[in-house]
Every structure is written in C-alpha cells, then in structure tokens.
Amino acid sequence: MTSEIHEAIRSARRAAGVSQRELARRLRLSAATISAIESGKTGVSVERLQVLADAMHVDVRDLLGGEEPAAREREPGTGIPRAHRPHGARHWREFPPLDIDPVLGAAIESFVETGYHGATMRSLAHRADMSVPGVYHRYRDKQELLVRILDITMDELHWRIGAAREEGETSVERVALIVEALALYHTHRRALAFIGASEMRSLKGENRRRITNSRNAIQYLLDEEIASAVADGALRTRHPRDAGRAIATMCTSLSQWFHIDGPSTPEQIAREYSDFALDLLRKTPAGDEL
Image 1 (cartoon, rainbow, N blue to C red):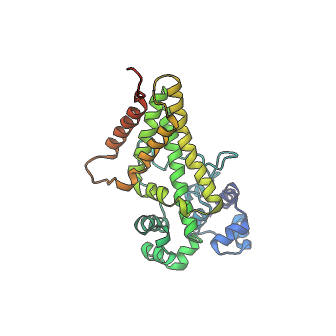
Image 2: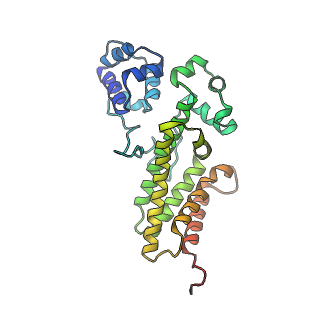
Image 3: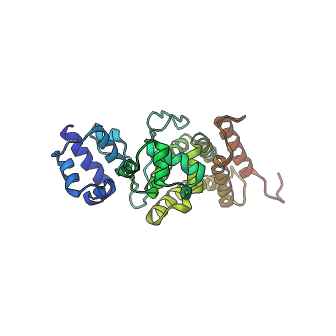
C-alpha cells in the first residue's frame, strides 16, 4: 500500500470526526495499531481497507484514490448530510445498484423481513454467510447497521431531491419534480425506504435527532415550494402545510405496497403522484367561485 492510502485513512477518520481510540474500539483493535496504520508502519490489506472504510462510513474508493473523503460530510451547524450522487448515477431519475457490503445487505433484508428487533447479529452473520466475529469486525452492533442504512438513504434522497428541484423553473414545477423524485426513490429503493419509514423509532440518542433533522429538511424543501406557489397564486390550497405533509406521506407509504413486478412501473407511479399532488394543491376552496 502506498503512503497516499495511509494518509487517506487518516484524513477519512478526521473528516468523520472519529478519534483513533474510537476507531480502534469499533474495530476491536488497539489505538496503537490504528496509529501504526495511519503512519504507514503497518501494512493494510484490501480486506482490512474495506473494514476501515465501513467503520468510518466512507466509500473504500475514497481511500484507494487518496482523496479527502466526502461520504460523511455534513452541512455546517445542521448535522444534515451533504447530498452525494450514488456511484454510477448520471441523473436523479437513474437508479443503478448500490455498492452494499454483505453484512449491510443482510441487515437490509432482515430488517425488512423481521424488523430491527427481530434480527440478531448471529442471524445476520448466517444470512451474510460470515462468522459472527467477522460481522462484529465490521459493525459493532445492530444500531450501527441501522444508522448506516438510514445515512445511505438520507444522503441519496438529499441529492436526488436537490437535483430534481434545480430543474424546475417555477415553484409549481419544482413541487412536481420533488414529488416525482420522492416517489421514484420509494419505489426503486423500496427496501431502504421501508426501513426508513418503519425503524426511526429504533434509533437512539444523537443519531435519532440527527436523522430526524435530515428527514425534516426534505419536508421543509417541499413546504417552501408549496408556500411559494400559493403566494404566487399558482396554487390555491388554504392549508399548504397540511397538504405538504399529506403529499410526503403519500410518497413514503409507497414502500409499504409497491412491488417492482406489479402492473405499474416506478416511473408511471411517480408521474401519477406528481399529478395527484398538484390536483390536491389546486383544489378550489369550498365556497369560492371558479
């Protein structure tokens, strides 16, 4: 391994706000070993590099490239993750497969099938075809797996919704595009979206506050565009805040019933939901003349 990779490991750890002692605890190593890895005194295999990347919640490609990692950067003062385009996605309407490690993939499948509390680290190890110590070598507990899943979800959602919003020339267009992006995500990434909708209650402490803020930020983007369109007279609803919540809930509930092999494609659903949202927001208040 080159000195650039060792420096990239150090940079990734610092960017993630993780001390050497904390990283050592996550990996069940000594702080001295982490120091030796970062200084280049200890070699790093490809397998261990992946383990280090998982523990710091960064893409292993960031470490191999020797660049400052971006995967866990957050907007200053908010705790909200900066949006990141998934690898291979050229446009917000494209959904290439995500690069998910075996343990995380097993956790996603298990949390959807049995729920967070129905899964154990032993059952995840069996599903991932790994030893139990091997699972603990990558993730210290189920909570870390759940946080990682929700971070992936929110990072991608922020990028997709931000990119969709930028394409709109008017507030009405931006509302429609945000709804389309939400509906596409909750159909194409149904498993991640399902966990996001059902397991927020299982988050603990600071992670729950942080991810709640991230979810609220997306709702506020939609609310802002609805309010702007109402102020311009382009939409007529008397209850823009309530309508915004109803529209967002309509989209997030897709993960509970949509099936990719059903009669409608994600793209068809997304277009229909955009129309549904605008129909709701254009509704003439009772008693008003058309």
